[in-house]
Image (cartoon, rainbow, N blue to C red; front, side, top):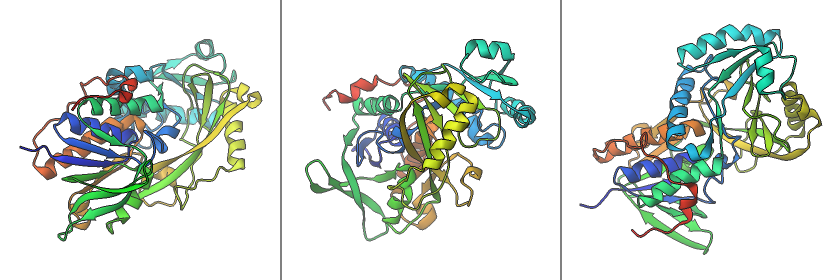
Length: 390
Protein backbone atom coordinates (compact mmCIF):
# COMPACT_ATOMS: atom_id res chain seq x y z
CA UNK A 1 0.00 0.00 0.00
CA UNK A 2 1.34 3.43 -0.92
CA UNK A 3 2.24 5.79 1.88
CA UNK A 4 0.15 8.95 2.25
CA UNK A 5 2.00 11.98 0.91
CA UNK A 6 2.05 15.24 2.88
CA UNK A 7 3.31 18.47 1.32
CA UNK A 8 4.44 21.07 3.86
CA UNK A 9 4.86 24.72 2.89
CA UNK A 10 7.42 26.38 5.17
CA UNK A 11 10.64 25.15 6.76
CA UNK A 12 10.74 27.12 9.97
CA UNK A 13 10.50 25.49 13.39
CA UNK A 14 6.94 24.26 12.89
CA UNK A 15 7.35 23.04 9.32
CA UNK A 16 10.52 21.11 10.17
CA UNK A 17 8.94 19.66 13.33
CA UNK A 18 5.84 18.63 11.35
CA UNK A 19 8.03 16.94 8.74
CA UNK A 20 9.77 15.04 11.54
CA UNK A 21 6.49 13.97 13.15
CA UNK A 22 4.80 12.84 9.95
CA UNK A 23 7.90 11.00 8.71
CA UNK A 24 7.91 9.01 11.97
CA UNK A 25 4.23 8.19 11.40
CA UNK A 26 5.00 6.62 8.04
CA UNK A 27 4.18 9.47 5.65
CA UNK A 28 6.04 10.47 2.55
CA UNK A 29 6.87 14.11 3.27
CA UNK A 30 7.91 16.91 0.94
CA UNK A 31 8.77 20.35 2.32
CA UNK A 32 8.73 23.46 0.13
CA UNK A 33 10.54 26.53 1.46
CA UNK A 34 11.12 29.79 -0.39
CA UNK A 35 14.47 30.39 1.30
CA UNK A 36 16.82 28.38 3.51
CA UNK A 37 15.87 26.47 6.64
CA UNK A 38 14.57 28.97 9.24
CA UNK A 39 15.01 31.92 6.89
CA UNK A 40 11.80 33.63 8.04
CA UNK A 41 10.59 34.37 11.54
CA UNK A 42 12.26 31.27 13.02
CA UNK A 43 15.73 32.52 12.15
CA UNK A 44 15.06 35.91 13.74
CA UNK A 45 13.95 34.91 17.20
CA UNK A 46 15.97 35.93 20.25
CA UNK A 47 16.28 32.24 21.19
CA UNK A 48 14.43 32.04 24.51
CA UNK A 49 13.44 28.56 25.68
CA UNK A 50 10.38 29.67 27.61
CA UNK A 51 9.68 28.42 31.12
CA UNK A 52 6.22 29.96 30.83
CA UNK A 53 7.05 32.60 33.41
CA UNK A 54 6.30 35.46 30.99
CA UNK A 55 2.73 34.24 30.52
CA UNK A 56 1.78 32.62 33.84
CA UNK A 57 -0.36 35.57 34.98
CA UNK A 58 -2.29 36.66 31.89
CA UNK A 59 -2.04 33.69 29.49
CA UNK A 60 -1.85 30.50 31.50
CA UNK A 61 -2.67 28.23 28.56
CA UNK A 62 0.51 29.40 26.84
CA UNK A 63 2.48 29.17 30.09
CA UNK A 64 1.57 25.51 30.60
CA UNK A 65 2.36 24.70 26.95
CA UNK A 66 5.76 26.35 27.40
CA UNK A 67 6.87 24.57 30.57
CA UNK A 68 5.71 21.20 29.24
CA UNK A 69 7.54 21.63 25.94
CA UNK A 70 10.59 23.15 27.68
CA UNK A 71 11.09 19.81 29.46
CA UNK A 72 10.57 17.75 26.30
CA UNK A 73 12.91 19.85 24.14
CA UNK A 74 15.68 19.66 26.71
CA UNK A 75 15.39 15.86 26.48
CA UNK A 76 15.20 15.46 22.71
CA UNK A 77 17.21 18.49 21.50
CA UNK A 78 19.75 19.11 24.25
CA UNK A 79 22.49 19.67 21.68
CA UNK A 80 20.84 22.99 20.69
CA UNK A 81 19.90 24.23 24.15
CA UNK A 82 21.68 25.92 27.05
CA UNK A 83 19.57 25.08 30.10
CA UNK A 84 21.05 27.99 32.01
CA UNK A 85 17.93 29.09 33.88
CA UNK A 86 16.60 32.62 33.97
CA UNK A 87 15.87 35.43 36.38
CA UNK A 88 12.77 37.53 36.88
CA UNK A 89 13.77 40.72 38.69
CA UNK A 90 11.83 43.61 40.23
CA UNK A 91 13.23 47.12 39.84
CA UNK A 92 10.51 49.32 41.33
CA UNK A 93 7.33 49.29 43.38
CA UNK A 94 5.18 48.56 40.34
CA UNK A 95 7.20 45.38 39.75
CA UNK A 96 6.80 44.40 43.40
CA UNK A 97 3.04 44.76 43.13
CA UNK A 98 3.17 42.14 40.34
CA UNK A 99 5.17 39.71 42.50
CA UNK A 100 2.24 38.00 44.23
CA UNK A 101 0.41 37.40 40.95
CA UNK A 102 3.63 36.08 39.40
CA UNK A 103 4.24 33.58 42.20
CA UNK A 104 0.62 32.43 42.22
CA UNK A 105 0.55 32.10 38.44
CA UNK A 106 3.76 30.06 38.38
CA UNK A 107 2.34 27.68 40.97
CA UNK A 108 -0.91 27.28 39.01
CA UNK A 109 1.05 26.49 35.83
CA UNK A 110 3.43 24.06 37.61
CA UNK A 111 6.46 26.23 36.79
CA UNK A 112 9.19 25.64 39.39
CA UNK A 113 10.50 28.96 40.72
CA UNK A 114 12.93 29.84 43.50
CA UNK A 115 13.04 33.14 45.31
CA UNK A 116 16.59 34.46 45.64
CA UNK A 117 17.94 37.10 47.97
CA UNK A 118 19.17 40.25 46.26
CA UNK A 119 22.69 39.30 47.36
CA UNK A 120 22.44 35.83 45.80
CA UNK A 121 20.98 37.19 42.56
CA UNK A 122 23.87 39.65 42.23
CA UNK A 123 26.37 36.88 42.97
CA UNK A 124 25.13 34.67 40.12
CA UNK A 125 24.54 37.61 37.73
CA UNK A 126 26.78 40.55 38.73
CA UNK A 127 25.85 42.40 35.54
CA UNK A 128 22.23 43.03 36.50
CA UNK A 129 21.05 46.28 38.03
CA UNK A 130 22.38 46.39 41.63
CA UNK A 131 19.24 48.28 42.70
CA UNK A 132 16.97 45.26 42.24
CA UNK A 133 14.30 44.73 44.89
CA UNK A 134 13.44 41.06 44.33
CA UNK A 135 14.54 38.11 42.16
CA UNK A 136 13.21 34.69 41.18
CA UNK A 137 15.03 31.87 39.41
CA UNK A 138 13.01 30.08 36.69
CA UNK A 139 13.85 27.20 34.29
CA UNK A 140 14.28 29.40 31.21
CA UNK A 141 16.98 28.53 28.72
CA UNK A 142 18.41 29.68 25.42
CA UNK A 143 18.73 27.88 22.11
CA UNK A 144 20.44 28.37 18.77
CA UNK A 145 17.54 29.00 16.36
CA UNK A 146 19.16 27.62 13.20
CA UNK A 147 20.49 24.52 14.94
CA UNK A 148 17.10 23.72 16.48
CA UNK A 149 15.29 23.91 13.14
CA UNK A 150 18.04 21.95 11.41
CA UNK A 151 17.94 19.21 14.07
CA UNK A 152 14.23 18.62 13.35
CA UNK A 153 14.90 18.78 9.61
CA UNK A 154 17.90 16.43 9.79
CA UNK A 155 15.89 13.80 11.63
CA UNK A 156 12.99 14.16 9.22
CA UNK A 157 15.38 13.83 6.28
CA UNK A 158 16.93 10.70 7.79
CA UNK A 159 13.43 9.21 7.86
CA UNK A 160 12.73 10.01 4.23
CA UNK A 161 11.48 13.61 4.12
CA UNK A 162 12.52 15.63 1.08
CA UNK A 163 13.29 19.35 1.34
CA UNK A 164 13.03 21.67 -1.65
CA UNK A 165 14.74 24.89 -0.59
CA UNK A 166 14.58 28.20 -2.46
CA UNK A 167 11.26 27.02 -3.85
CA UNK A 168 8.40 29.49 -3.45
CA UNK A 169 4.75 28.36 -3.45
CA UNK A 170 2.92 30.22 -6.22
CA UNK A 171 -0.42 28.45 -6.41
CA UNK A 172 -2.44 25.87 -4.52
CA UNK A 173 -3.73 23.28 -7.00
CA UNK A 174 -7.35 22.22 -6.60
CA UNK A 175 -9.59 19.69 -8.31
CA UNK A 176 -13.15 20.36 -9.38
CA UNK A 177 -14.55 19.26 -6.01
CA UNK A 178 -12.99 22.00 -3.84
CA UNK A 179 -10.16 19.73 -2.76
CA UNK A 180 -6.50 20.77 -2.60
CA UNK A 181 -4.35 18.24 -4.45
CA UNK A 182 -0.95 19.89 -4.75
CA UNK A 183 1.24 22.98 -5.02
CA UNK A 184 2.74 24.84 -7.94
CA UNK A 185 6.06 26.41 -7.00
CA UNK A 186 8.91 28.43 -8.42
CA UNK A 187 12.33 26.81 -8.07
CA UNK A 188 14.36 29.95 -7.67
CA UNK A 189 17.70 28.13 -8.02
CA UNK A 190 16.98 26.84 -11.53
CA UNK A 191 14.25 29.35 -12.40
CA UNK A 192 11.74 26.59 -13.12
CA UNK A 193 8.02 26.47 -12.37
CA UNK A 194 7.04 23.01 -11.15
CA UNK A 195 4.12 21.13 -9.62
CA UNK A 196 3.94 18.54 -6.87
CA UNK A 197 0.87 16.53 -5.92
CA UNK A 198 -0.03 14.89 -2.65
CA UNK A 199 -2.81 13.73 -0.34
CA UNK A 200 -2.67 16.73 2.01
CA UNK A 201 -1.08 20.20 2.01
CA UNK A 202 0.01 21.79 5.29
CA UNK A 203 0.69 25.50 5.51
CA UNK A 204 3.30 26.06 8.22
CA UNK A 205 4.14 29.56 7.09
CA UNK A 206 3.57 31.48 10.33
CA UNK A 207 2.98 35.16 9.68
CA UNK A 208 2.50 34.36 5.98
CA UNK A 209 -0.36 31.90 6.66
CA UNK A 210 -2.96 34.39 5.47
CA UNK A 211 -1.24 34.71 2.08
CA UNK A 212 -1.28 30.95 1.51
CA UNK A 213 -4.90 30.62 2.63
CA UNK A 214 -5.92 33.42 0.26
CA UNK A 215 -4.71 31.32 -2.69
CA UNK A 216 -7.82 29.15 -2.24
CA UNK A 217 -10.15 31.97 -1.21
CA UNK A 218 -9.85 31.15 2.49
CA UNK A 219 -8.48 33.08 5.45
CA UNK A 220 -6.94 32.54 8.86
CA UNK A 221 -7.09 35.00 11.77
CA UNK A 222 -3.35 35.55 12.00
CA UNK A 223 -1.98 38.96 12.91
CA UNK A 224 1.63 39.52 11.74
CA UNK A 225 3.17 41.39 14.66
CA UNK A 226 6.84 42.31 14.25
CA UNK A 227 9.19 43.19 17.05
CA UNK A 228 12.62 44.83 16.97
CA UNK A 229 15.55 43.18 18.72
CA UNK A 230 18.92 44.75 19.46
CA UNK A 231 22.13 42.74 19.87
CA UNK A 232 24.90 44.16 22.05
CA UNK A 233 28.44 42.96 21.36
CA UNK A 234 29.30 41.63 24.81
CA UNK A 235 27.99 38.68 26.82
CA UNK A 236 26.92 40.71 29.82
CA UNK A 237 24.89 37.96 31.55
CA UNK A 238 24.82 34.16 31.52
CA UNK A 239 21.06 33.58 31.63
CA UNK A 240 17.86 35.30 30.41
CA UNK A 241 16.93 38.33 32.51
CA UNK A 242 13.21 39.19 32.59
CA UNK A 243 11.48 42.15 34.19
CA UNK A 244 8.93 40.86 36.71
CA UNK A 245 5.87 42.61 35.32
CA UNK A 246 3.28 42.37 32.56
CA UNK A 247 5.14 41.61 29.27
CA UNK A 248 6.15 44.82 27.54
CA UNK A 249 8.74 46.41 25.26
CA UNK A 250 12.40 45.87 26.12
CA UNK A 251 11.69 43.73 29.17
CA UNK A 252 14.02 40.80 28.49
CA UNK A 253 17.74 40.39 27.76
CA UNK A 254 19.18 37.03 26.66
CA UNK A 255 22.75 35.82 26.23
CA UNK A 256 23.58 34.41 22.80
CA UNK A 257 27.17 33.35 22.12
CA UNK A 258 29.38 36.43 22.65
CA UNK A 259 26.55 38.94 22.87
CA UNK A 260 23.23 39.71 24.52
CA UNK A 261 19.94 40.35 22.74
CA UNK A 262 17.32 42.83 23.98
CA UNK A 263 13.74 41.88 23.15
CA UNK A 264 11.35 43.09 21.93
CA UNK A 265 8.84 45.66 20.72
CA UNK A 266 5.41 44.84 19.29
CA UNK A 267 3.63 46.60 16.46
CA UNK A 268 1.54 45.77 13.38
CA UNK A 269 2.35 45.91 9.66
CA UNK A 270 0.31 45.56 6.49
CA UNK A 271 3.05 43.86 4.44
CA UNK A 272 4.83 41.04 6.27
CA UNK A 273 7.61 41.10 3.65
CA UNK A 274 8.39 44.75 4.39
CA UNK A 275 9.01 45.41 8.07
CA UNK A 276 10.63 48.79 8.80
CA UNK A 277 13.17 49.21 11.57
CA UNK A 278 12.02 52.21 13.61
CA UNK A 279 14.87 54.30 15.12
CA UNK A 280 12.79 55.45 18.10
CA UNK A 281 12.12 51.83 19.03
CA UNK A 282 15.82 50.99 18.91
CA UNK A 283 16.56 53.82 21.35
CA UNK A 284 13.73 52.68 23.62
CA UNK A 285 14.97 49.08 23.59
CA UNK A 286 18.45 50.11 24.69
CA UNK A 287 17.07 52.37 27.43
CA UNK A 288 14.82 49.67 28.86
CA UNK A 289 17.41 46.96 28.46
CA UNK A 290 19.81 49.24 30.31
CA UNK A 291 17.40 49.32 33.26
CA UNK A 292 17.92 45.56 33.58
CA UNK A 293 21.63 45.52 32.74
CA UNK A 294 23.30 48.95 33.07
CA UNK A 295 26.31 48.06 30.87
CA UNK A 296 23.98 47.93 27.86
CA UNK A 297 23.86 51.74 27.90
CA UNK A 298 27.57 51.94 27.08
CA UNK A 299 27.72 48.79 24.97
CA UNK A 300 28.41 48.56 21.25
CA UNK A 301 25.49 47.59 19.05
CA UNK A 302 26.27 44.48 17.04
CA UNK A 303 23.03 44.15 15.10
CA UNK A 304 19.38 45.20 14.87
CA UNK A 305 16.73 42.92 13.40
CA UNK A 306 13.02 42.18 13.34
CA UNK A 307 10.83 39.10 13.63
CA UNK A 308 7.13 38.92 12.67
CA UNK A 309 5.24 36.89 15.26
CA UNK A 310 2.11 35.13 13.92
CA UNK A 311 -0.31 35.97 16.70
CA UNK A 312 -3.81 34.53 16.56
CA UNK A 313 -6.78 36.90 16.52
CA UNK A 314 -8.04 40.19 15.18
CA UNK A 315 -7.68 42.46 18.19
CA UNK A 316 -6.46 46.01 17.82
CA UNK A 317 -3.85 45.57 20.57
CA UNK A 318 -1.46 42.77 19.66
CA UNK A 319 -0.18 42.14 23.18
CA UNK A 320 -3.68 41.24 24.38
CA UNK A 321 -3.81 38.22 22.06
CA UNK A 322 -3.09 34.84 23.68
CA UNK A 323 0.13 33.42 22.30
CA UNK A 324 -1.18 29.88 21.95
CA UNK A 325 -1.28 28.11 18.59
CA UNK A 326 -4.15 26.99 16.38
CA UNK A 327 -4.54 24.34 13.72
CA UNK A 328 -7.16 25.16 11.06
CA UNK A 329 -8.80 22.43 8.99
CA UNK A 330 -10.08 24.34 5.97
CA UNK A 331 -12.68 21.66 5.28
CA UNK A 332 -14.36 22.72 8.50
CA UNK A 333 -13.85 26.46 8.10
CA UNK A 334 -14.43 26.94 4.34
CA UNK A 335 -15.40 23.54 2.92
CA UNK A 336 -12.01 23.25 1.21
CA UNK A 337 -10.59 19.74 1.52
CA UNK A 338 -6.96 18.70 1.67
CA UNK A 339 -5.57 21.86 3.32
CA UNK A 340 -4.51 22.41 6.94
CA UNK A 341 -2.92 25.55 8.42
CA UNK A 342 -0.86 25.61 11.61
CA UNK A 343 0.09 29.00 13.00
CA UNK A 344 0.60 30.98 16.19
CA UNK A 345 2.68 29.63 19.05
CA UNK A 346 6.39 30.10 19.45
CA UNK A 347 9.63 28.19 19.01
CA UNK A 348 9.34 26.49 22.40
CA UNK A 349 6.01 24.90 21.40
CA UNK A 350 6.94 23.86 17.84
CA UNK A 351 6.99 20.14 18.64
CA UNK A 352 3.52 20.30 20.20
CA UNK A 353 2.28 22.33 17.24
CA UNK A 354 3.59 19.63 14.91
CA UNK A 355 1.95 16.89 16.98
CA UNK A 356 -1.43 18.62 16.88
CA UNK A 357 -1.14 19.16 13.14
CA UNK A 358 -0.13 15.56 12.48
CA UNK A 359 -3.08 14.35 14.58
CA UNK A 360 -5.45 16.42 12.41
CA UNK A 361 -3.83 15.15 9.21
CA UNK A 362 -4.00 11.52 10.33
CA UNK A 363 -7.64 11.95 11.27
CA UNK A 364 -8.49 13.40 7.87
CA UNK A 365 -6.72 10.63 5.97
CA UNK A 366 -7.80 7.75 8.19
CA UNK A 367 -4.28 6.98 9.35
CA UNK A 368 -3.91 5.35 12.77
CA UNK A 369 -0.39 6.12 13.91
CA UNK A 370 0.72 7.56 17.28
CA UNK A 371 3.01 10.51 17.84
CA UNK A 372 6.58 9.43 18.64
CA UNK A 373 8.31 12.79 18.91
CA UNK A 374 8.21 13.14 22.70
CA UNK A 375 10.72 10.30 23.06
CA UNK A 376 12.71 10.53 19.82
CA UNK A 377 16.05 12.26 20.22
CA UNK A 378 16.89 14.54 17.34
CA UNK A 379 19.98 14.03 15.24
CA UNK A 380 22.76 16.60 15.13
CA UNK A 381 21.86 19.64 13.07
CA UNK A 382 24.97 18.89 10.98
CA UNK A 383 23.31 15.73 9.65
CA UNK A 384 20.90 17.78 7.53
CA UNK A 385 23.69 18.36 5.05
CA UNK A 386 24.51 14.67 4.68
CA UNK A 387 23.01 12.51 1.93
CA UNK A 388 20.91 9.45 2.71
CA UNK A 389 19.81 6.64 0.45
CA UNK A 390 16.04 6.22 0.26
